[in-house]
Image (tube, rainbow, N blue to C red; front, side, top):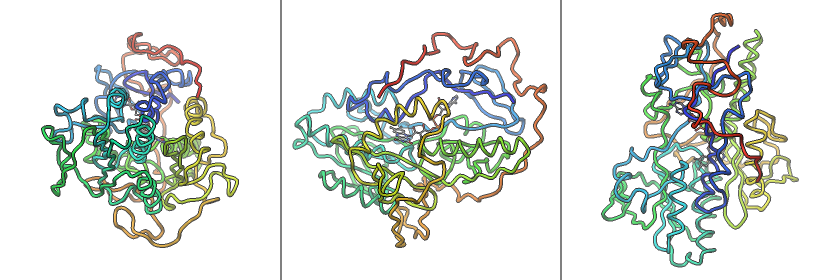
Length: 462
Ligand SMILES: Cc1cc2nc3c(=O)[nH]c(=O)nc-3n(C[C@H](O)[C@H](O)[C@H](O)COP(=O)(O)OP(=O)(O)OC[C@H]3O[C@@H](n4cnc5c(N)ncnc54)[C@H](O)[C@@H]3O)c2cc1C
């Protein structure tokens, strides 16, 4: 089997670390490592932009004019913040009083803005769902409250959390707990706010229903969209997300295409933990089927996220398609040591330790102790009452769906893994680029500009 990874550059970002940059808890050097060092020598890495995919001819066309053929394609190009999608967001106030922290340059610019902030109206805002890590803006609001107190300007600041949801979060129990956390800190909560535009002259967010929210510092999460190549290839929905089966991760349109991570339409959070658990299922099924056995694993939508709440504490969420985030302990009943949906010091230490686990266990593909791929109900206090979700639907038995995007991704049917075409013999190489342009050398793209390849990673620490 030949495996080729295509990515636009060699810099892998630990995206959860973006949240910590504005509060000077992490430095950019803590959250960027070279990609090629995490890939086995048996994997080829091509560093260039994907222009488009031609699924009918099983070809990936690269922006430098080369093409790669494939027997199987795994789409994992994620989602990115798109400030250009909201009128006025990229206006004169962008980078001055309007900021985001969903990209490294954005988080760095916000670090400077936070340092300059002397009090006034700070607004934390979500443009539209779904976004990756839907708890990150909430974490930002809680950390900002702590940061403002420590800098002695909390009393001079009004802090408001503005969301298109009808509560602080997408799921009822979590929404209730988070609303309490905001309330305890006198952080205002403005719900059902669908932004129409940003008025740069008045420095106001304006909603479609005519509400106006003024700001001195706006920290927004722009619309999150899948990669543009998806649109150019005609493979996605209006947010450039690739529709896929909820349990097998197979593209609904192309049986030889799998979708992992944020790039797809899984009805659970877009989160690194979800990408990780889904990848476990994919690998097991793919290898089993390749060996002629039954692909028996089904992805359950498992998500697991720490939520920083400031003052050296954090909360924890653990849920899947059918069990919403609830209170209790994790991973062990009673003993925990982590507490679900409750603030604790040990949760915070868990979040900080996670960066070490990310570089040393997750990326090299090693198992994480005590964290199963499938969600366990052990230790969880399940509230069985039928409650409305943030989307307003009744929830027996509490579907753990992401809030719907503008025009919701279709409820996806579940199906067994489709029959695969017989793999071509290795001799009929899938890679169709000219041999001279592509040398089968371990780890690094030999055609890349050496200046674009990062040096060896620094020994990770946390
Ligand atoms: C501020 C913040 C905090 C977060 N906190 C958490 C957290 O605490 N816990 C958690 O589980 N998750 C968290 N996440 C979410 C997590 O980072 C993502 O869900 C995860 O990275 C998704 O992985 P992915 O592989 O699907 O996409 P990505 O990690 O985004 O990777 C996509 C890759 O595709 C490449 N690519 C895209 N388009 C092209 C193209 N045209 N050509 C070539 N390459 C391309 C990109 O360069 C990138 O390497 C957070 C995210 C943010 C922004």
